[in-house]
Image 1 (cartoon, rainbow, N blue to C red):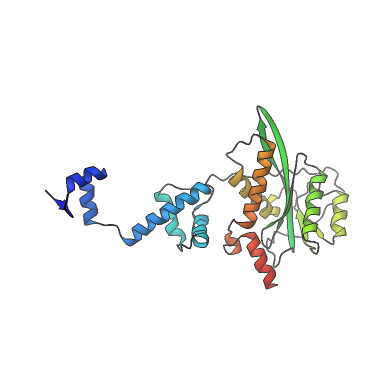
Image 2: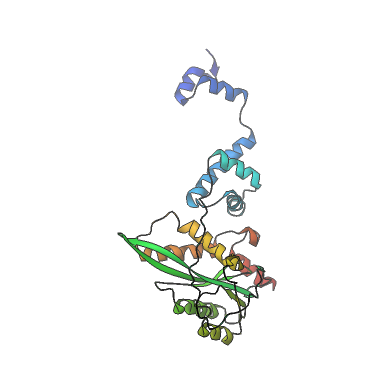
Length: 285
């Protein structure tokens, strides 16, 4: 009877729950160092996917490089992900909920011109409002999130959550931003929602020496990075889930924005987080 290091192969295979043919195949073709390494990486990928099922292979590669010290190229991580059946959650098309004013007090030109780059923080700010739903029994309730995004470092400068999509929501978001950045005088871009076309909001911008810019009618791409943030946020913390209380939903949004600003890596920021890139840019100024 064939033996391996003193043990009968048949008995050893029975104990391990494998066939003898599998054993002999392994004996003829032992795993290479690369295969063993791929299996180790696969285990870590499974854990990353468990914590962040929204991550695609590119973000997983960046996570491995920055937070696990494992360098690998995109193709290798894609092969491993395919082998173990891991892919990101489905992308959803975000819906903005700002409503155009039929009788706007002030309309600004599109001075941003889709130039979605800024050389330094607080040079260009984008803003918008989006809607979330939660359920109490069969009743559907809504809350609204207003946020301001910086185009240089893609950080969320300020945000407010309210049960009402009104002027106060947008004003409070703006006031929070200027409190956090009192010396900022950015180009301020939005769509033509009724909150942004009001005389009160225009006066607020003038008071803080900010130039107003607005998207053209029916051109969501004019505010592309802001719309993109809504898509990221909703895909990663909202879609596919059913929130059953206002408090739970608000906490989820707050936790996600903290994660986005401080822990979510972005390739556009040289595989850094918005706040890390923000600090680096300020030091270089």
